[in-house]
Length: 309
Length: 281
Image 1 (cartoon, helix red, strand yellow):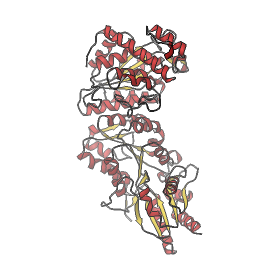
Image 2 (image 1 turned 90 degrees about the horizontal axis):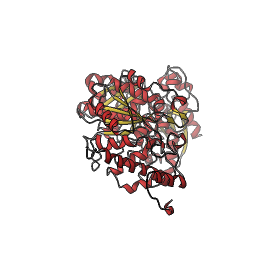
Image 3 (image 1 turned 30 degrees about the vertical axis):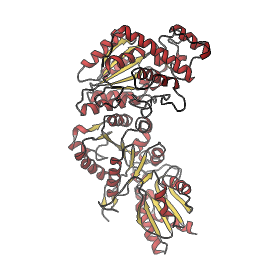
Image 4 (image 1 turned 180 degrees about the vertical axis):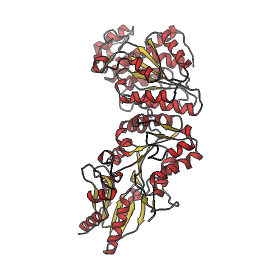
């Protein structure tokens, strides 16, 4: 299957939108090459701000730029965007409700060989906990473009979670996305698998295996992790069980938030959460790490079989 | 802009702002008098004689901007904003109370005229720099002013902002350091030796000027100097007295963050020459 880079999607998107809207500016913290904002820099040097290794300052400056009517896209690795600069994102951006887009690349164990220091598995919990912050994810090149467009069109702070590796293409350029949307990639009858980001691909593989075993599985891509809207959750009513899968810690991620939201929406079904279970990551390839931490297709299959009894 | 820069008039306003600060904090039962009182003359001069702004249109695109990075000095900011007409003066007595738009620390979404949400130190400096860069990008001649505490400069973010402001030659950015020499745990150089401040900022690429932050002539000259500097951001190091104007609060670290009791309130008001009927205490 064709693989394409989500980060490159971000770089291309910035140029597309930057050409049409002079309010769009980009901010980098010595990772312009890795986050692909360098493409924007070459095209619009005056509208690209490099901060060296100053993530905290970069987030504050993004808030100030928004104050003058700009639409800043501040980009760095997830561990620095959500972790290092948490307080700046919280107070300078979100509490002040400045229209800043935080685009975090290198989220989760999928970052791979750099190890736990660079594998941000807590960012959805941290960013999701901030009042008013929208949290979006992407599983492939086209969904990255779609969520970035929605982030741009929305007036308010947004956290966009991207991954380092290139990913198999699931969608095409016709994908329509609005904040709140959850994409049904595959319809099913028995079990729903809810996932986001890179683990969507493991979920699709698991669904294929399960179908061969006679289990009808629906696969859902949570491009929106926050807000989870009650209306959008009704489609899970028809299932007997739901398994969530994410490259993120169990507490405060997609699974725990979705299970809580289903409960509040009065949708009762058996649930299991597959996530990083209260441990830090370690060095290895994304594939090895997903096996090691139980986020791979076979672990998902086992969990689905367990829940179906 | 310069509606009335007569120093006699400004001194009267500064006196009234001090009365506001003490009353607000007394009625709130908490707050930060010391670092609010030390900034009074600077804030009055800024809001009456320096800033290009329109209280009837707080979002006016051509405005100059002021950011209170030392957000705990919110009372002095609220007093000058009310006195310039951003909101009714009587709102001041609701400081820190439920349903008030006057939060314990400045909140952009709550209070007209507040440009940034601050209170976690160091952050307002970066926000102010972002404003300065945005204004430059739009080729506007508006300027940005930011007030920093002398304890605040312990924060690493302050030095990130200082380094990048000089890197981007943000000469439309003026920082005012409220150099009152006290932070919560004591004398600033004993708590954390940030000395020499002047040389550090110079080494980071800033133009600096040291003044007496209670002297209106020196404040005026410093702001005029700041506007004349090209190619560099400017730092005005303003020597001030924490608790200035209330004898028992002056240079006393204990008055960083507490409200006066009834007796102390009466004494402070007496010193400011304001009659307060006993029943209102």
